[in-house]
Length: 217
Ligand SMILES: [Fe+2]
Image (cartoon, rainbow, N blue to C red; front, side, top):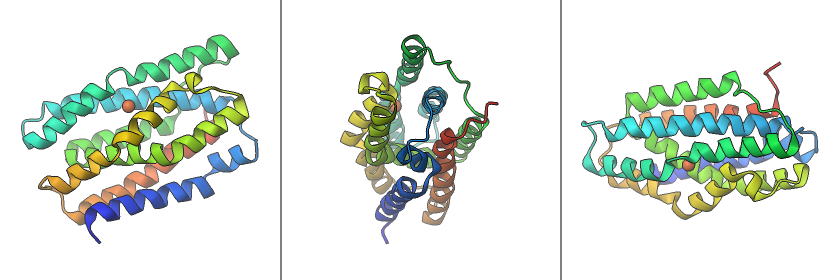
């Protein structure tokens, strides 16, 4: 199968699997999540978005990148500016209006960020794959997750901007990263990219499913 289609198919399988088998979605369907899940989620997004921006900053400075890929990361860098503020503001809101305490990000959040950082340094093309996974999966799973937040906690889209703004943005351009993968002359082999994708999807699953558990106690 063509690399582009294989990547797309794997992300779609990941989303199907998460929607049907993750503890997070199971608990949401059974109405057994408490609001702590939302505070942990926003706290993690803030850290993740900050790290994404830092990685993009270093990638656009990377002289060994092809101009095409560097320009793509530059566009992303401009787009991603201050997205961590969305997550920060969502936390301020949940604290002020609902009087919920703000969570510290859990350990597994830092594990995922370290994984992303290490692989992006190994080969920036891995970060391109990650961008696709992040944007396409929020397009597929984001609306369902938003509707759980609405049903379970009576949240509005304006209470969860770090999620709702990404759903709106990413549905319009999630295919761009995949087009780049197809267009540029890749340094990494197809086998290495797919093997990274499998690892990434496992880590990404754990990152989101982890919000179902309060490990801060
Ligand atoms: Fe973003």
